[in-house]
Length: 126
Ligand SMILES: [Zn+2]
Image 1 (tube, helix red, strand yellow):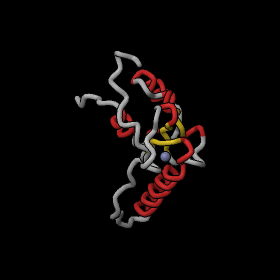
Image 2 (cartoon, helix red, strand yellow):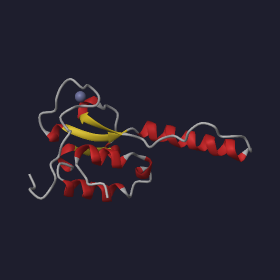
Image 3 (cartoon, helix red, strand yellow):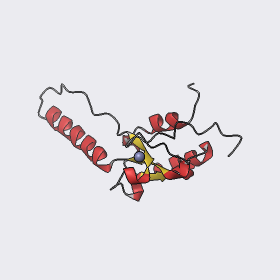
C-alpha cells in the first residue's frame, strides 16, 4: 500500500451480485457498459434530429454512462477495452495513470468517471 495515497475504499461490495464481498481488490473490475454508451449516443442523436425538425425536445438529455464495480465474473460480456482490473486502480497514482490512458478512448467523456473516482477515493471538493 502506498502511504502517500488516500485509502482505496468502498470496493468490497459487488454492484452486480451484492451478497458476496470481494476479498481482495484484485478480484474486482471497474467496467462500463458499451451498450449503455451506445444507447446514450442514440438518445442524443434522436434529440438532435427532433430539434433539427424544429420540434420541441422535452425530455431530459441522457446522463453519463455509469461505471460498475464488482467480481469479474459478474460482468460477462464486458470487453477488455471497458474493464480496469482492481489491482490497477488501488492507489490514486494508479487510478490517475488509468485516467490518462482512458482519455484516448473516444467514449471516455461519455461516462461518469468522476462518480467512479469519488466512490473509491475521498477527493477534496475545491
Ligand atoms: Zn459479484
